[in-house]
Image 1 (tube, helix red, strand yellow):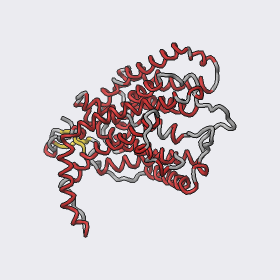
Image 2: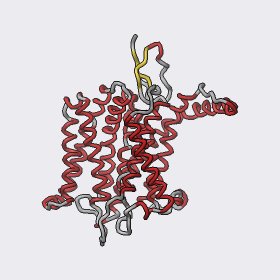
Image 3: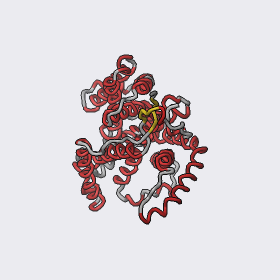
Image 4: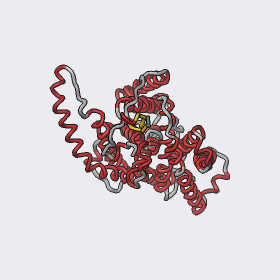
Length: 416
């Protein structure tokens, strides 16, 4: 019988050797997270008055926000530009973005000394602050992402609510709630899709604006007035490689066939995007004449060359090579290099290039900081695995007689 692709929960055991390792890493991070809230920042971090930001901002937030860009780039491609053939990868990208931004918000909470005041930006507005704009946009976008996820919850549980015991009395109210949400979400989903794209563009660029404010504290190789545009373009460029990497790795993990026809076509957008990023970077250096700093062999010039060579030039060449686009291993390699390049760029901008006016001791993250960051990553992977086993997120082949009617939700991503 003919087969079609349809989003459905993955029927596979949750636990595996890899999952056990991730659980250990997550639990280790949870222990140090408890220490942070019980004993304070100074007990678990190497932060000080000269280095008030560490890897919780430079990696968990700046890198995390960039790598979660696959949500808004695929939403724009599939629903704003109406490329219907990419709907199958929209749901996994949305889930990755939702989990990524959730942990970004948690990282900010961990990094704030007075974490219980994290709600202040909602009340005390400062329109001149780049951080205020980042905070408001991230909070708004997290809300939008959870709203965009509601159709998958409705699809999974509508007409299937069957609680046991005393909770069975909630079956009828929950069914009515799901029906009401179904009626409200369907005609308004396009608003949230567009809002998500706009909000993402705003705060992705503002993360670059934040470092402009640092002025001469940032090395000239990274301090530029076009940093907001560079941050936005690099986030757009890394969005598709994140989706490609997630698609290939998750397919292998769950024993599914990777959708190479879609991923290969998606990869064709990455090369030109990286070319635009490289042209802007080199043009900015030529105008500001900051290339002179590359003649000095030091940590700054070496990190810059690593960032540009391995994170932009080599993967750009791979994404413009037809053989690489058709090869699962080469496509995965190219995607990982782009992700590595954006990771290094954010680390360079926020940590390596940052030099305070006076330094008593250079900052290096403590074991607790690293443990919490790795714990976040492990927890995000575990939650992704759990979500795709509960909700209809990943497209899977089904026989024609089992094929359900096309969903009316744009965000659901059923194959037309």
